[in-house]
Image (cartoon, rainbow, N blue to C red; front, side, top):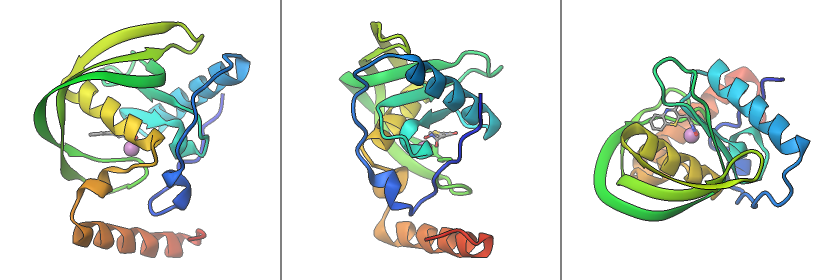
Length: 170
Ligand code: GNR
Ligand code: NI
């Protein structure tokens, strides 16, 4: 088990489109375990593999209060979307910023578990928001893309300033 490093906006690697998992072996279950540990360590409700610079379609989520119900979605596909809802979103790759984003209120999806077994599920509320947010990551998309160019630019320059102070590249 290990805690992975999370890429931060505006890192270009967050714009990579992830590929489907085709082989379900130990490397996938190990990745899922590390992603769950990383999500809990950073106190996030979800994490997409893209955020830890692994460009495969793997998501982990835990919206439970007790943080004891991790859900893993591999190769997720939204089948149906219903309703519209606006909620405040944050992202571990955009630390310290929270903004309103409009998404489908309720979704139906199919995915595979960490062993490759297919399943379908429905989601509403925070879980639905989170799944849509994580699938966006797999497509190289971030919640800041839904904001005005001005807001996005401000967030970008504030994070760049922080990264410079931290001595990070880009
Ligand atoms: O921890 C997170 N909280 C959150 C809150 C509202 C909408 C989406 C999220 S996901 C985020 C973790 C994260 O960045 N996942 O990619
Ligand atoms: Ni995120």
